[in-house]
Image (tube, rainbow, N blue to C red; front, side, top):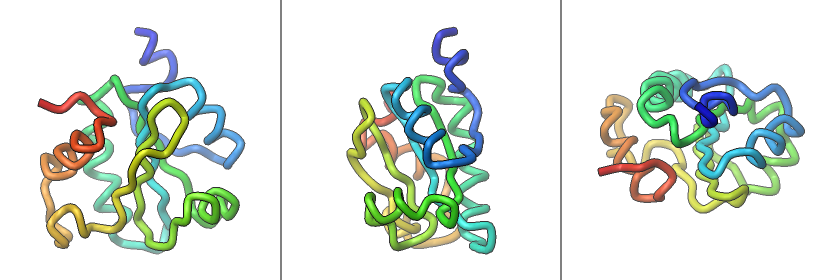
Length: 126
């Protein structure tokens, strides 16, 4: 219940960098998708993250438009879109950059992404 009250269990957009810091501060595990509207692969990533957000309520799933977050993209050295920043206790632990870790294909499975997030210990994966 506490997780759900903090916005866990759904995949949603964060409007600004300031909101990002607020969201990250109040949750132990966060997956944040840095995306661009014009990038087709971001829509593929969205589809998988929406499924995982419902399944893994222990983790907060967010998306942030990279074009509205120049400071964060610079600070986190995000050069490739889509990039997932995987955060624990407010600190970035790992990244999933593009689809390289996911078989380098557009039709990777949700399970593949789930496994990759589990490797980073940002979700409870068995």
